[in-house]
Each structure stands twice: as structure tokens, then as C-alpha cells.
Amino acid sequence: MNTPISSMALVIFGSLIGSAGAAGLKAGAHRLKFSVKELVTNWHLIAGGLGYGLSTVFFVAGLRHGDLSVLYPMVSVGSIFNLFLSKMMFGESITTTKVGAIALILTGVVLLGVSGSK
Image (cartoon, rainbow, N blue to C red; front, top):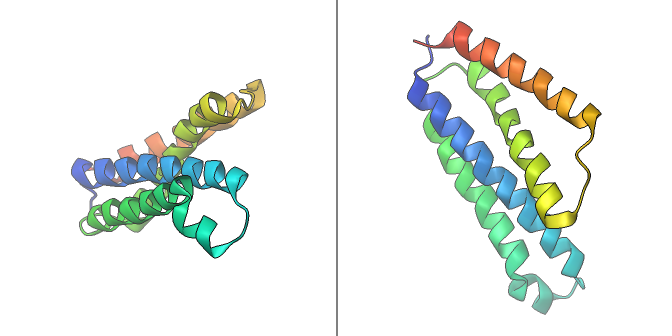
């Protein structure tokens, strides 16, 4: 089975939404007091959970017409978005090692995409 570009786009978009969801969960975790009231009123946690749920919808839609071996590694594209969100939202550093790791991930994703696309 070949993987259409539209499936790749859906999975990558879902990955970006999932990355935003992870940032929401981290932001919510900083504010968490571990009470029931806090769990239902912490909008960062709620938004993070919704982000993960929405990302799953896009991921499943993308999987319908493509190869899992091509599409699943594309989820790692979200790590690029995570790198920048971490810097902007939490002041985390962007190191040469992190940039190198992202470059390796991107290289792998591109090679898989080229090998499995229609």
C-alpha cells in the first residue's frame, strides 16, 4: 500500500495538535493541587487533554489510507513543535544536541515519506 500525501498531512497536523496538548498538560501540572475541584477547573489540563483527543482524531483519519510504518514515525515531527513551545512557554533551552536530534528525526521522516508516498 502506498501512503497518500493527504494521510501524511493529517498525521503531521495531529502530531502538532498533540504537541500543543502536551504543553497544556505541562502548564496545568505546574498549577495542580491534586484536588477534584482543581482537576475540573484547571483549564490548562483540560485543554491539554482535549488537544490529545483531537490529535487522535486526525491520526486515525490519516491511518485510514496509509502505511503505519510510514505514518507512525511522522508523529515525531511534533517534537520540533515541542522544542519551540518548550522554549516559549517554559523557558527551556534549545541546545545544539537537541537541534541535532531534531535534524536526525526529520531526516528519517523525510526518507520514510519519500519511500512510502504515492
